[in-house]
Length: 91
Picture 1: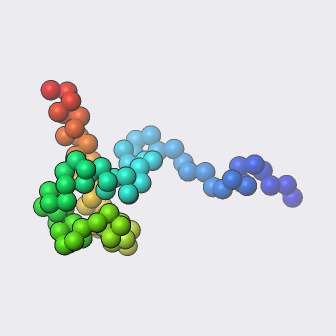
Picture 2 (picture 1 turned 120 degrees about the vertical axis):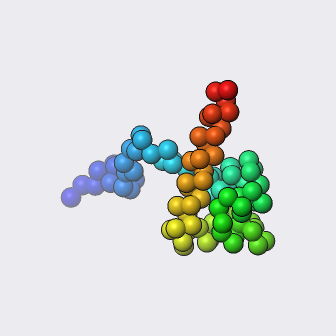
Picture 3 (picture 1 turned 135 degrees about the horizontal axis):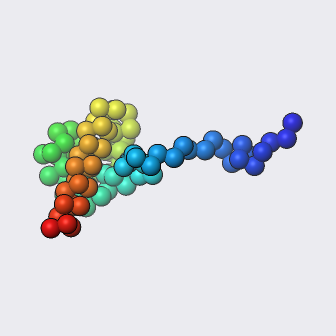
């Protein structure tokens, strides 16, 4: 049985044109928020201890990957952040 080239590469990721998070890694999302807002503001807006007590990208990523509700909160805040940036650029 012959293996097709696509099967040899691996499963394909379906296109998600209406998903604003498509193609973004959790690390990219967190890094953008920290650079734009800072850890202190992030801890105030997204009440998660890993953003308040000795925050770091690596420790926060470990927690967020294991905790779906925390990841959802961060993604929601990220989407709000992006909307605010677009509004500021339009003004």
